[in-house]
Length: 168
Length: 246
Image 1 (tube, rainbow over the protein chains, first blue to last red):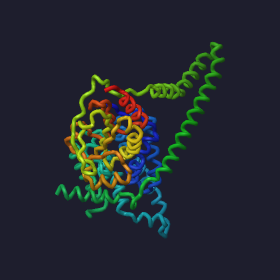
Image 2 (tube, helix red, strand yellow):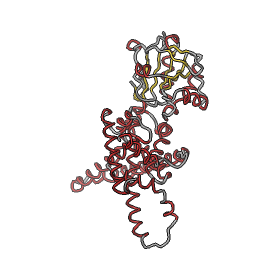
Image 3 (cartoon, each protein chain N blue to C red):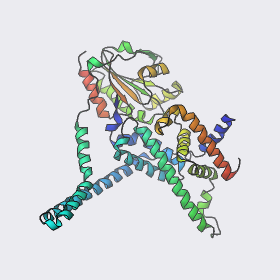
Image 4 (cartoon, each protein chain N blue to C red):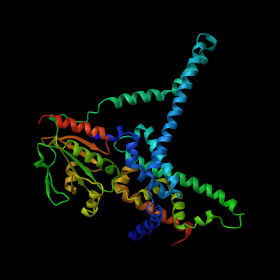
């Protein structure tokens, strides 16, 4: 069997995966243009990592993409916490505050940043439409246990959400 | 209770969908990728020049016993920094070797036969294509890497049809023809596309998409490509199998 992706040049892989990787990251981040930047970073990282090239290249790409998105999200949340201290002294709402009215998304993102990375990765990739088998390959998990992992991740997500924002 | 919980979490996560029909800008991404690669290349080149300069400067110091240890240390650091040169050379050397993924004719196994209907309802039976080289591609409309390969298969079919090539697409879309037919039209797929089923996918072991088989004129599997392949590799394999004597 020939695992061809080990001999592919980066631009072919770019055309095959860029849009989907960027979309996965854009689910996690508020800024889609930042998601596009990170997607390029992920592809460059792939090209420098010989271990990632091969049959499981696409699994590697999705795993690293969702991690990159979550890391950036956590940085974003830390930054906004610092900024909110400064904002406390500002009387009128800024356009940024208005944009922050996308409460739903922000709440979900905050909860994803708070739960374990593996659980957040699982939830994001699942909501992006990956099958159980694809999830198992992408996250190096036993396919037979995916259902259990997923159900645990959902439970944790719900608990963390209710703890922060109350039952909805 | 479980189902409610799934639905509740799903609804929350669905809020994360990028706005509207947002799609990443491919041309912007591509130019960014090229820019970054160029930048990395320049950085590596700069490092190698600096390392070469430092080695050259260290060599005269070797002549004196008192400075020899220092010079040796400098050289080893510089050579370490230039390891990418070694990687670069070996990578190029390995990619220069022509990829020989074809199974030897004596070791090939028969391709499992199947009969599936194409988009026009006409049956396609693999065993009736004996005497032709068949490029059999398992794909789906939602599979991004598959989409990258389809234009190549269209081109191969046009170029090598007279030499005896037949490209066949087996879609594993769960939504059936309602998803596949519009896709065939939109992508101008002029080779034959059938709707697959679990039995066929299982018989071929096509558990991930895309998976492509090159079947020789005697109906035996000459090459199996899992995942997206370089266009040149496909073409080289096709030519070799077309040139084989039956």
